Length: 331
Image (tube, rainbow, N blue to C red; front, side, top):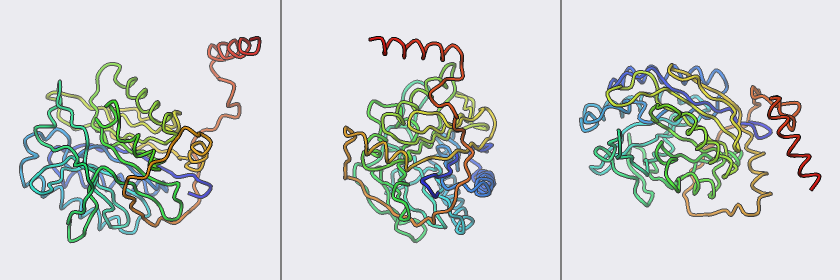
């Protein structure tokens, strides 16, 4: 994390639908692997503790209680880890059920972020089970601890405020005005998406387009962790297609169709510098900020930096670029 670099990861597991104990074991194994790689932000998919395809089982108290108990178990098992862990689960709040992302750090839950936009078209039926996120933040009691709950929340490291995390869930990115826009305007440099985006022909290309353009427009990093193997295939198929982008540039993506963790390093200092120089990037100040204390440690770089950043390696692209430069100069 020194010099502005933060190691991040997106993970999928071999899903055991409605078996929270088995999913806990898979998640813990992924957490331990990521921690050994010096990861500081680890993102799992949407509803990873239960599985996305549980449908009417979400109404069963047995399933919801199992998800809660396994989340509490993960808190105890990660209390000595300097790593922010973000994962999905169903959460009941005042007799309403929400599709949430839980944010864990050193044995505490920093926040619960509920999904804002619920797809209820074609093969999706989320409005049957879940409520949309309320407009205002609040505090809820979970496992004897008061935890912030809401969509207008940012997670910021006291040691380096450029490390500011904003969270949205799957469909939130696919709407005309994604919550990540507001999150970035309030200071989020690392945008996170716990997703369960099903696989169709050419959908990977569209997913690339969405994440690339959003990260570029917002001068932000974007980490998307997608649901994968083991989900129900009655209506949809999930490939576990993860993406890590920084300011419109792809840093890493998964192969898909198998459990996988992908890694890269985000240069949050560079992102902050880009925003300072862009005078049309207007900051807002209408979100609650939750602080955590993560020590600054050296980051081993694995991302590729081209020694010739302005010269495309692809011959056809290089020819096109040279022609464009020549036309600009001659004008």
